[in-house]
Length: 110
Image 1: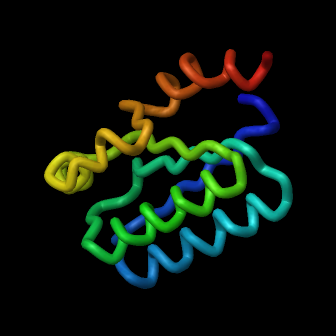
Image 2 (image 1 turned 45 degrees about the vertical axis):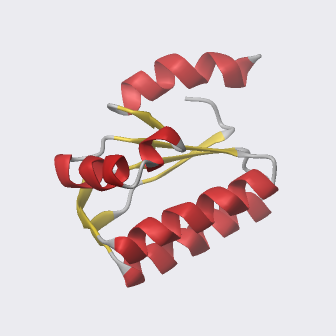
């Protein structure tokens, strides 16, 4: 994977606390010059509305910094929340990390 891509892998519940933590980590990555962030949801068991809000705020910040944000490995509950809110049409999502690498890594190498 390209050094330009940074992977965050939250775990447990993506709620208020988890969302705040994720936002801080993304801000730190952006401030250090990262231009591509992948959030791997493989270990996230549940996401509520505050976690969803944190994702949207993170996406806004990433876009403001001319960077890219991707999601992968969403479980059924998280994917359903994304689909019900139609955010699956806003976020770029991949079934797993290898699908992300196959699609995005060639872009980052050019």
